[in-house]
Image (cartoon, rainbow, N blue to C red):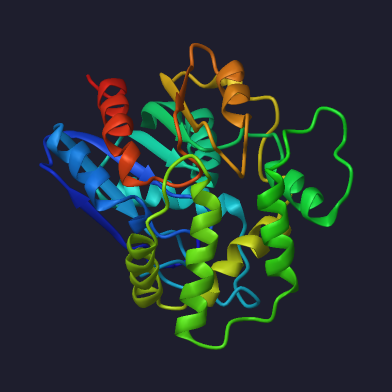
Length: 292
């Protein structure tokens, strides 16, 4: 196991019911909004969030010298739980963090009290390949997951062809543009709040460029996701998707179909981010789901 440092922080009392928040690919833990975390804590939960390796304040890896795969990113979930003394926890996961949560629920069911996945895709569905084929204009094989929205494809095609940003200002401007896209069109977009968030992400990163290692990790082992295993999930599962999801539209219903007893929740107006307008609804649903 690589000796990479993982940054984490926790809120609430040690005796409270534990929730581990798992953010998506190339994303820092602070993308779980402070207000949302506060609502969970006020509801009697011990909440832990962390930066994935190669993001934020966690350690960065020389990928050429020490390559890793998404198996290692998944195993970091156990490392964080162990470091906080948790034999088990409620997992609340966003985007690719949902793949990690599903995998952990299959692999180590005794460590997962419940599972909540937000804006995610079904484990084994190959959503990364679906997105890449969409970006490359390649046809999707029969039975593939739904493609991202056209505006998502157009944005990232343009981004892939653009030169890298030259300075902090232009980099943050690009990060805000990406947040606007992922926010979707169902709710007003607060550019000032987005700027504050992206400046925080930029300034707390040890090496902002290290996030590309998550893509290299996916390429190093494309078959990271086990296929046809979601029926093995024993944890009570809540699957949440925004009505204006641009990245993985309709994927949540497929997860809910494959996990026995899973419940599907659609949040009106939400896209692929967690804006203030949905915090109360999301927190209430998660507090109810994690009540013991």
